[in-house]
View (spheres, one colour):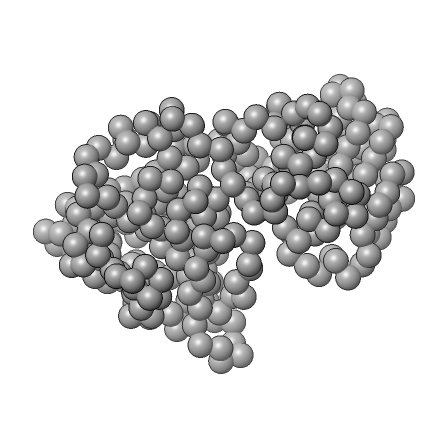
Length: 318
């Protein structure tokens, strides 16, 4: 969702009014885009959720999705996705102007070009959407994601964190994929090094499922653990405020990492052996030496992370 922010804004500006966004609930778009003026409404596509059957799965779900689209009385749908099912639902709902990438069978249900060549399908999602807008002649002020910040969100973050005099570093410990998880032991060593460098406060950012890891990190620091604050399972609107106020962010390659960079905060992203994607000027990628094996974060050392931060900032201290 962060990757597509510049495209959503460009489409809204081109249309001359805010758009209705259809996306899956796990995107948390309602939280992330709570203050986004280019989005008038958010509707859920309940397809393939984890652990249950979605409301829009199967033939019955497809018909429910068609009714939902029809009830919206939309004049145009633009699919920044390769899904054939969504294109078919838009066609069945009678939306007169149907646009999208047009790969494979999706093309059957779209009636307005341009359509992207097949080789673009291999590219990153952000690049696909950018290529589409360029082909359609829709201007985009900037391709770099930027999140709307409000004084209310900043004030809420300050209230929830309490006293952070002297500044703080945000550390993103969460990850939905094992291969992107650096691990509690390394994060604890990193936190201790940053505290010894003079940072008075560190904020651990993640989901509620990261509570066990956060507890391990705090306990590993002993008496120094009191200098850590936890921002776990917070509404993304509040997370935006927290990471935007941080002096810098360091963490796994996750959505929150992208959020931090989109607020303008310097972001040190642990990519391990995953190829970094160059879409945000504030992201400084940290990778492991290439051994030709995609084995996650195991070869990223604490010393390597500290060296990158120091080289970029000129110091580790506040």
